[in-house]
Amino acid sequence: GLTSPAIAERLCLSRRTVETHISRVYRKTGVSSRAALAGLMAGRTPRPSLSG
Image (cartoon, rainbow, N blue to C red; front, side, top):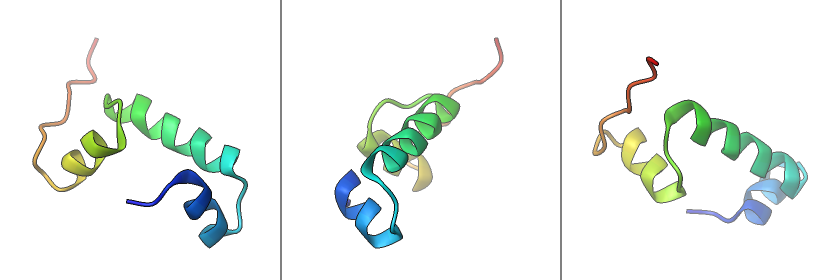
């Protein structure tokens, strides 16, 4: 539920580093928002197929 700047501050990283990691997670999981990612991690959203 934190913003990229808040995450960056807590982890002593740049905002851009946080955003890069988040975008890579989105790509790998097939989601496009933090809410969808949270749902996926909570088991509320089925993981998209990565075959292709």
